Amino acid sequence: MTDSTQKKKYKLPGRPKKRLFIGILTLTTVLVSILLYGIWYIARLGLAEIAEPLPMVVGALFALLSGGAMLAILNMVLAVKGWFYLPFLQRQTYELINVLFPVAVYVAKIFGVGKRKLEGSFIATSNLLFNRLGLKVPADRLLVVTPHCLQLATCPHKITRDPQNCKRCGGCDIGSLVTLSEEMGFHFFVATGGTLARQVVYNTRPQAVLAIACERDLMSGIQDVYPLPAVGVLNIRPNGPCYNTHVDMAEVRAQLEKIIIPKEQDNG
Image (cartoon, rainbow, N blue to C red; front, side):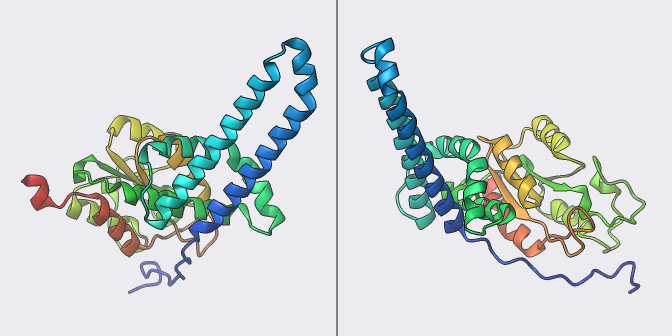
């Protein structure tokens, strides 16, 4: 086997810790709640001059927001622990994350936690919440999306929009994914960016998505397609970001087997 076709050895990333994201998000929620109380305390006299019941109304609204946020986090903890939880609160949880994550990044920096590590922890938590739903879909209603950087940079074959153009030389993981899609029956697409990926999701209208990407793109993608269920698999970057990346095919297959209805059951 020549150097051009031999796959480089690379180290698989460690599994992100779910409690990291939950802990930082909880701390951020507490800090924001304290800030809201401070704003209310300072403004309460001025609010009373406008209308006597206004301080109570604003205070109740702030308390409702803080209480709802803490309830969403508690529900997330229960799901992660494998205990009884309320699946219908997942929407509120993702909305909370959308609002507070930029603040959580700054809070994490205080403790020496980088944004990428925090995003990885979110993806692990989101995947677990997905798995707790026990959702199963037919293979032809599942879409797998991966970035074009998974393709070998020197490859002359254009596989964006049509992965079947891959010659399966073994120089990258695209060929393995094409073969897996033929074996299991799911839709497979290689996207050049988030906009195209969202367009594919809209056109395909799947019941679930499995996305392969870096932490940043996975986090934004999972939130963008919600409430459509999505699982994220981190790519591996032995050559740096966005260049000749890889993916753990065993992890991809394991996630797919959790989602796809076995053929014998689907036929039945």
